[in-house]
Length: 338
Length: 289
Image: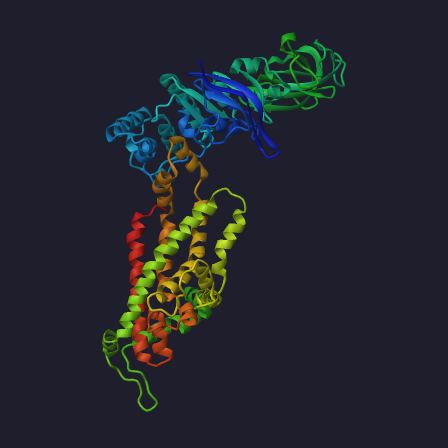
């Protein structure tokens, strides 16, 4: 069953297109990540679902009900903001029950739900603190608690972890995912961090320039990028993209097996080995600990190989590369997968 | 060496210190001293009279009338100008066409000198051909001498003060509103909070520091503003619009009763200081910074 459905939904600000008309289905109980570089339209998409902005065209439905023009509060969802949006003058407890007070819940219900969500997130000791007396991570948990206390089945998150340090971010990733599964939430999560997307998502929606480039599971998107943009965006480092002339890598005599009409090929660095017969010149060798990245030149094109960390190659050295034929992804003139 | 540094520091402070002492601190102390002295006459120098000046203040019916007038004036101008300022700020903080122009329009009264403002309003209030008269006449209302009638004169000059002050206070509220993150409003909207609920539970508490600041200023202004009284009514008719400061000015510079004027000054300043301190220490506890 789909929890959220966008049909031809687009948003324009005057002449600026924030989101081209797009279709998207988000299954109930799934963790969907909207991923893309800044300005790609991911936050716009989230705000349209939340009702904080109204779509210029198209139809949005939540649980089969058309909510295109409904105010945020009538959509049965909660939201965690990037800046947390905690009310600075209210205590943790008052922040959390704010929404319950709006909806005039009884004192009994307020305190029941409050203590439940406080213990769920381990915030019991902080209930009387003000947001300014909390660390970034604690504020984040309070924002999450405020979203969860409404007990709505859909939770929208706008880069909720972007203000935390790397260590905490990793812990929160696991915790968020566990919470989502435990409570059976439908989460729509915006991020520009592909590690977050890959590690948490059931479904990744990759956006670029206000268009949806690809929708799929993290494994799908990694294994079969649908466009050059996806090939260049996903993976650290991403695929090496090389131009081809006919069946030769540009500026070289290296032949690759491609399906017509290919103009660019892309190869994951971990699929390139240094034990083959394709001559290349080393331009740079970057040591990363567990492995090293060897950047090489073939003709006029650049290719990266990810190899065991201890190997060392000097700049200008000639190496012989190899890759399995199925590791070559072909893209046409328009940047779409062939 | 340390003494040299100290001397250097005091030398640097000296120009500002000299000006402050000469024109602020010495006059304040001198006023306090003068309030216990008789007014010097050509043939009789000033002598210590103790609380005599204060005693004659208690017996002075015009002082009491000025105080009463001033309290009514304060009681009306403070809430009206602050309330109006908040309402205007909330309005022009929204997204709308010509917002910049509107903000400027509200701020204009603040830029105008009070003397000019008073003269404009003097025309509004003029009997038989003033603006109010003409509008009133259009609707068939009887002619009224707003400033000449004892029952409406004080209200008329109060309106001028509110008009003059609200725009100024609005700027402070507007600045505070701009400092409040828009995501708070969005978070409240997701929860379904209406405008009034959001104002009462979020905006008003967050604006509290601004409100305290504006209130302190409004109180001080209510006892400090006198320009428009001078231009429009000169305290008349029959002292109906005489405010404390205007009475003080008359005593000091028309009747040349220096000792008595000093006594009124001390009472006025003491009252203002007390009110400001109460505001800062009592309201401050209720404010979130």
